[in-house]
Amino acid sequence: MNSTSRNLQTIVFVLIAVGMIALALGGYLTSVSRILLNPLVEVQAWVYSRFQAAQDLLRAPQDMARLQQRNLQLEAQVSQLQAQIIELQQQLTEARILSALVDFARANPENRYQAAAVIGRDPSPFLRYIIINRGSDDNIRRGMPVVTQQGLVGRIDAVTANAARVQLITDSASVVNAKIQPSGAQAVLKGQTSGDLFLDMIPQGVSVGVGDLVLTSGLGGGYPPNIVIGQIAGIRSQPQDLFQSATVQSVVDFNQLEIVLIIVNFRPVNIEPLIPQGTQP
Amino acid sequence: MTIFAAFLVLIPLLMIQMGILSNLPLLQGYPDIILLAILAWSLKPEVRTAWQWGIIGGLLMTWVSALPVGVYLLCYLLVVAIAQFIRRVVWRLPFLIMLVMTILGTLLTYSISLLALQLSGRNLSFGVTFGLIFVPSVLYNLLLAVPIYALMGEIAKWLYPVVSTYES
Image 1 (spheres, helix red, strand yellow):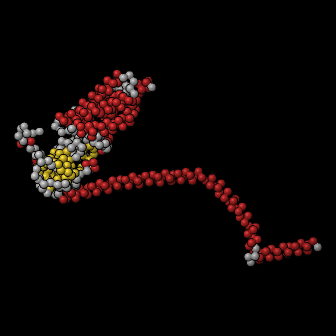
Image 2 (tube, one colour):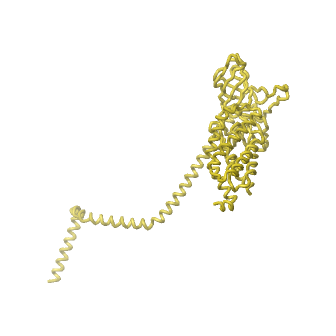
Image 3 (cartoon, one colour):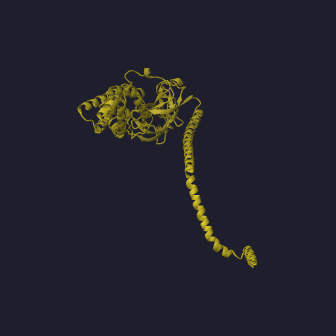
């Protein structure tokens, strides 16, 4: 009896199980399974997230060290690239200047040029001199004119083996014989303490105007002729004066000098012995 | 050693002066950090080589500058003399003395420079240069007197360690 009852129970369970499976496969138990499984899924998710957190905590020191190392590498790389950018920008600027200087040299084939970099300025604020990195080893001699692609800068004042000092035309002791275009009038260009240029000894009666071009005249033998100096910015003309005078705006920015050209095939002429005694300053 | 240190200190300062500070004018005025270094050095009580530093600084500046030969040497030696005199007269040397001497030293140096240039034939007006060069340079030098004084103090402590330790 007992065995018959057990067998019957087993059959009933099997039938119920098969029925349940059949119902589940037929999709009739979806809502029931959702109600039953949702809490289980949530619990499972919570358990798994706790496990992940514990695992991250245990692995964190390794990752942190690796990330820090990687961060340092990347920072170093960024610094290196930034330095390269700055260097390339500097090279680009220099290349542009040199390109302009080469164009200038090609446009004036009668002169031979030696390029030089500006490496310093005279420490005295009363003087307008620059120091360049070419000297007697490069056949630089005292008195040679110095220019840029824009125009006249000055002339060599003192030379050592591998450096030279250039007196700028803005120096208060600088005197350049100049001519004004288009009138062709001769004048004398002087430097000022303020760094400005002053054109003196313009003959009365000569018509000069703002914007007229000022060039070297070549008189006196100190500079070659026809190097651009600047433009007239203002004129002072009084009827009672013997000469007119003018202020000149230089074409060269003397505060931004980086590379200059020395005209090496020009030899200045010393005319002092020819000046009668007593008329020299 | 202290003479050798003069070259080690003054040559880099000269390079900074020519390469950087001379490109940063205030109106037309520049600072003179060689003057400030010599001045600060001369005012340090433990220093025994102020004259030598003045000579070396003067010679270096004479070498690079187009000012008439010997002007910087004369100026710096006069500044050292005044600083040494003040050091003897004033028992304590507070930082204020450095500032006062900066003004005096700058005016003295530039006055002598101007006079020498006028004697050499340059047409320089005192009125124009006072506004364009003297006043801005004094202000510039006052600004730089603080770091230069501190720098020279550290160098003096390094070169005269026994005296410095005893005094502190």
